[in-house]
Image 1 (spheres, rainbow, N blue to C red):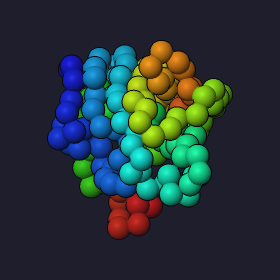
Image 2: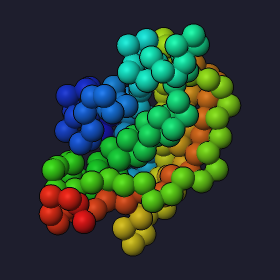
Image 3: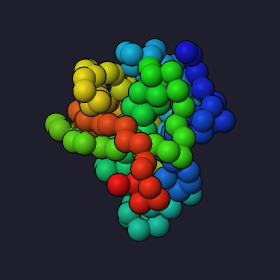
Image 4: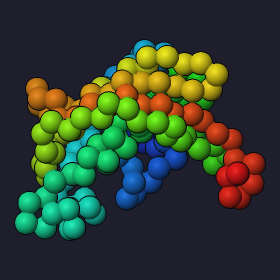
Length: 153
């Protein structure tokens, strides 16, 4: 699978504004890796409070963007799309490092590779870049859970 525009991204992710962190998938090799894009604009809802005098994208949202790219990779690897009966959860985040701030106007490239998949757990390594500079990286552990009732338990 090659690229995905925003309409295809919305088929693979249950997230919606203001929490959708993927604008486009540049490439996706199911079972291996995905490269996605988040265009960071001054209109992001978090910039009003983080920080008004020096807008910086919160590191946890960069990690969330990596996880959303990982979800696209997971769903494309399994050959299905997200629906209202399932949720993609974080199980763990290890080795997170933030190297440079991400600001309005940046194009955040998210390169997420599958490390391992066993017993319903997916482990990924994600690298976030702006231009040629690594701005963050982390190891992510995720799982898919089917919702049994309206509260997801």
